[in-house]
Length: 237
Image 1 (cartoon, rainbow, N blue to C red):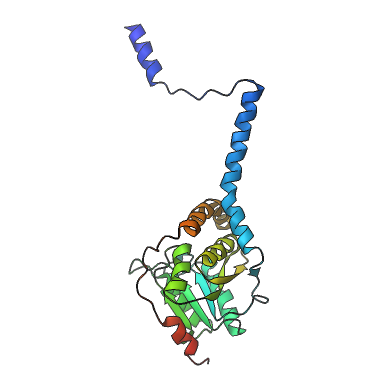
Image 2 (tube, helix red, strand yellow):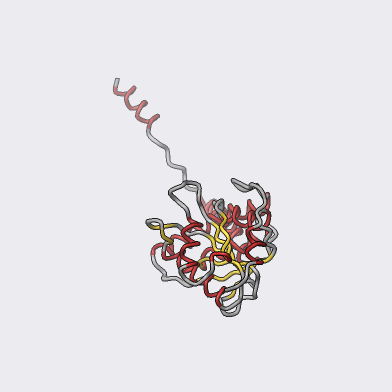
């Protein structure tokens, strides 16, 4: 009976993988780990390479007709501090004449959660006329926002606005989607959210590389919209 119990316990006990024996085995294990790390970093290297000469500040970014502001969450129906800083940068670009129209893109998949609506309200409260703001209510992720900017709103060239940890991926994806893009990475306090965003980008870059390679359709494409041409034709106050 005891022998049977010991055999049953041995079957149930998880076996840990054996460490490689000998110098050669350990060397191969280290090489495998290093190769995995290199492969994991390739997508991030790609985003940095694409965006290398396309990042600027609000003062020196090349002018474009359209600025694209990506959503970054709401608190009690209002833009988070991170999103507010993106919108502040867009308002500055509009005031200085660097852009003529601001395209706000974010999540409006639920009636009680309207990122583009909150972004529009913030911008109008900071001096951007409502007629010069266009809302994309189906910007569920960065790839969707870039594809819809090109395919639905007809944007061919844009200044993209986001945090520094995200802007390279945004530029790389919009370039892949056919939008000639320049990025403005807004400054932020290096708090827990900033570090989380930076860590998340390492994994998000992998998805970005797949999106750029295979070019999947957005979650929702829909018909073309005339919001951007109409806003470009609206008189500036």
